[in-house]
Image (cartoon, rainbow, N blue to C red; front, side, top):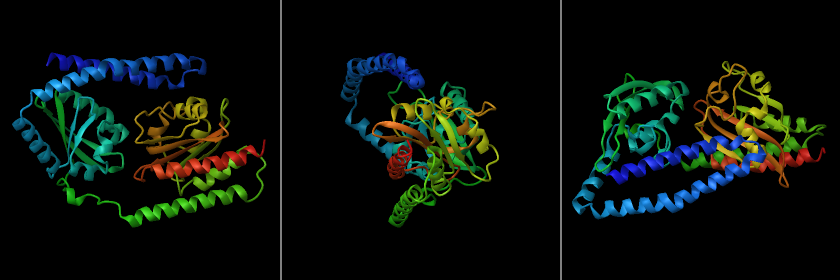
Length: 374
């Protein structure tokens, strides 16, 4: 048991160091070799120390587990999955360990995607801090708790979250069992949630992507564009509304210049002028895309400061209620011409991998149109 606790503490320290490395992604270019050396050192630490340690613990645990114990564990796992109530098993930092079938239907999040991610990340931003605090209190033995939260995909529907401490057999740390219910109503059964996406819907989305590609090509080829900013604005107008709620266009790479911002007409919390006045260099996502030339696709972004803050000091992603984003560099022959950032907000479906691939194709066409004006 002592060995297991020591391994858990070492792993937690490693996770914290990785988080610090992620936070260092926007360091000056000259300091990047130091960050890279540190990352390599941490990877060596995992390969040489943590992984062999884990294998020893696993081998010991397997040898000491009887056949009857394994059957009992399988039975309990089956019961957990088939419970008609939406239930999640999380740790003290709200990271999901298990999500049953009813919970996947209730939240609209696949169990495979949710596992390993904080459950608080699927909640509306104002509820996340309270949920994390209450979870930590339950995990340290302060008693069961219950609070009302809102799912980010359905912010208008209140959800009652009931938390209770649970000590899984053979584990050194307390876990937290979370039961989710619609506030003021009975909890929905697994049959009441959304069913699998029909093939017709997939075909419809594919056709919509083809229409978008055609519209983008037509816009780039129709009529002369006199400046690179004009090309960016023309492309942004094609994407705005039909593909993304917000479209932010930044020209350049080493020195970024914001040229176009298009947002929802009914947006009250955040105006296009607020983002137009923002310095692109203060947006870590944009800087990283311009520096590395790689597309970033994020669903329910965990870092509220990933796109910087507005003039009032509030995180842009929180004020705009961003549920998914695409940050795409406009690259031609390895040179970045600019960066397009797309936001989807509220209950709108998140960006998919297929949409990210289509956007990557359009980005090359946009970069080619911009390069012709040099």
